[in-house]
Length: 214
Image 1 (cartoon, rainbow, N blue to C red):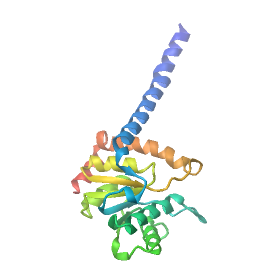
Image 2: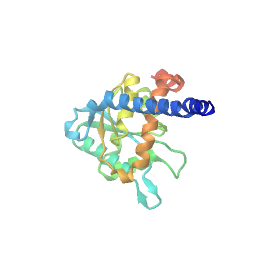
Image 3: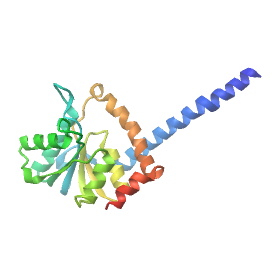
Image 4: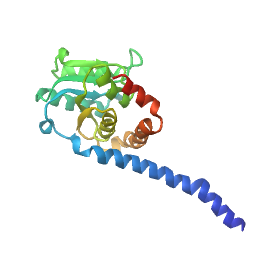
């Protein structure tokens, strides 16, 4: 009897919650990927002309003397869109917390060094979250149609957010960073996708605030 009770407690307190948690994570990820995969492109040549590219920010270095390949690859994709005439402007959106950490400033410097003129670059220093960056592209900068530029594992969530905000977006994924050098951010993205769903369907406050800005 005691053993049966112990099994019952294990099921209700451990096995069932783990099963439900796994189901939520898998379900949210499948939803986001399946609903957006047809609008994600790997080459600038495959993309129809758009008014602007929304380039999502990340840190330029992963260590003091180690460049962040995700950063460099996103910039390369943005430059390709601009130089092939697919977009007229690049809206770089990132996080700035001090003069020492400024994603937007670093992106602008890199774009300029790649030959993009300053008057073709717009800066959003308040893109702390993907939701913020996507929402502000419309609410602050007036773009309701754009191409999103980010990593292959990131663009699906950004498109999902754009869909929920009623925006017309497609995406160009930057060159892939191999798994051994991107496993941590990829794992984090699985959880971020769950949070994106919750932002709109469970914790509606931030998502509704973003929509209200428009």
